[in-house]
Every structure is written in C-alpha cells, then in structure tokens.
Length: 226
Length: 123
Image (cartoon, rainbow over all chains, first blue to last red):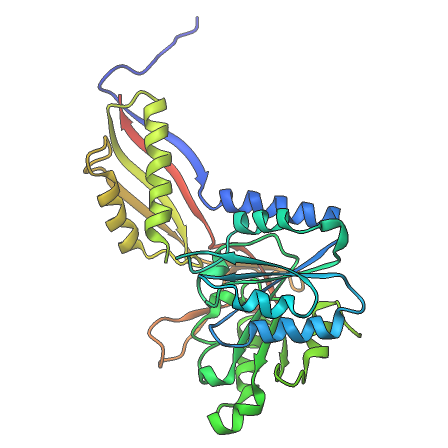
C-alpha cells in the first residue's frame, strides 16, 4: 500500500534552495580562465590601493618583458583613458575598462575586454583593477595570479587594515621604498605584516619609478628572469 | 560593501522561487554568509526590508547564519578554524590565512559563502 500526501492551500512549506549568489561571477571567471588557457595566455590581476603604483608597476614589467612576451593590459578605472593611453604608448594592446561607478572589476567586464583583443597574438595579460583594497577580493576575474600593490606613502598600517585582499594574493609589492625614510615607514614591517597574514604571498620591495625590484616581481610571478 | 546589490540578487531569487512554487506569501528566508565576505548583516537586513516592500515577502523574516572562516593545511593536515591576530589597536580581530599549527599557508575551505539556504512560504 502506498500513500500519497501533498500540500494544500494555506499550508506552510520549507523549500531548500542552496543557491550560491557568488556563482554568477565565478562561472564567468571560470570561462575567462578557460579561454585564456586555451590560448596559452598568462593573466595577472593587479590590485592595490589608489595611487600605490599599479600602473607604474605594469609599465616597468612591460619594459622588462616586452622582448619576450606579446603583452596586453586591461585597465580598470571609474573613468578616463589616461592610464590605458600611458600603457599603449609602450607599444602593447590596451583596453580601458570604465566601471562608471563601480569600485572593482568583475568577471563580466573582463570577458568583454577579452573580446576586444586578438588573443592569438598574446602571451601575457595584465588586468589592472580599480584602486581599492577591499572589493576586488570578492570578485575573481579568471586570472592565474593576483598581485597586490601597496606603498609606504599610505602609512604603516595599510596591510593589517586590509587583510582580506591577501587571501588570494600570490605576490605583494611594497612600492615607493625610496620614500620610506621621509615617510618614517618601515617597508620591512609592511612585508612582515603580509607574511603574518598569508605565508603563501611572496613579498617584493620596489621603486617603480626607477624599476628597482621589478625583476624580482617578474620572478615571483613566474614570468621573469629566475 | 555591495550589500544592496547582493540583497537585490537575493530578493530576486527568492521571489522567483516563491512564484514558481505558487506561494501566496513568503514567510522566511534563511541565508548563510561567510566571515570573509564584505557583507555587513545590518546593511543586508536594511536592504532586504526596503527591497521586499510591496512584494509577497513584505514583513518576512530574514535569518542570517554567520559562517566562520576555516581552512585546511596541506603540510600538517590541520583542518579547522582560522586563527585571528589580536591587536588591541584595531577594533576587530583579523584573520590570518596561515596554519595555526605549522605556519604554512592554508587552503580556505569556509567563510566566503553567500548562500540562500532555504525559504519558507505559504501556498
């Protein structure tokens, strides 16, 4: 004997959903990752605070690596093309991603940018996020490697105040070390703070105006002289 | 950060499911939100209240379960909660992603969720 019961009007039901709201971005990030891999392209997501030197770091890395790799840069900003024009002057393909009001890039914006470049003519893509040490952590883009740039001019507590950005950080760059003295900030202390939050993160001290330390960044990213 | 846009997604998803189920009233929504996300619970609740106004979810209960950060270690087989660095000069204690036993990096296994677990409806 089999009984059947069913809900009736006015009754209360619990419905299991288990719906992951971060999946929408993650699915597109996975697509981006696959597309980049299929073309044999390395993608590096450069995150960091406003004015920390993200574009300068990319500039220096392009100067160091453009003989060896075919490079493109995607440049996220609320508005203007200033930085993408600056990077384009180095002779690489660039795409300006203007987010308008959004404080971070998301996987969909990167997907659109990928459509604008000739993927078959590329080995390496730098994706420069909007200057922000908070929101980008929650939005994977599909890159292989994530870099976080902070600089000594932001003061001694920039790392410890933003621990979450280091969850997925493969490399942390402490920039403007030439100004550590005048700023009275200990760059090694910032490096130590990164390691105490995430031992997986390699830390490099740089001066991106002169290129000091940039070869070590390239090595840490696995794209430079070893 | 982003509580309003995340909560819009939540409200859209639960209303669409409730409609699919033939609900006349949405009574309760249960969420799970990880400690490592940037979602403030008070802001999510505030946005939810505004966004559900004039829908069948109006005045419904929003329950949020906090999921603490966890990780596992490939070096020493630790599997458990993240350790927190306590420094009295900061108002909150912040997590370290290193193994509390051996100091090697952990793989994060929990704490980044933003999940609608279940909804309660009346048909």
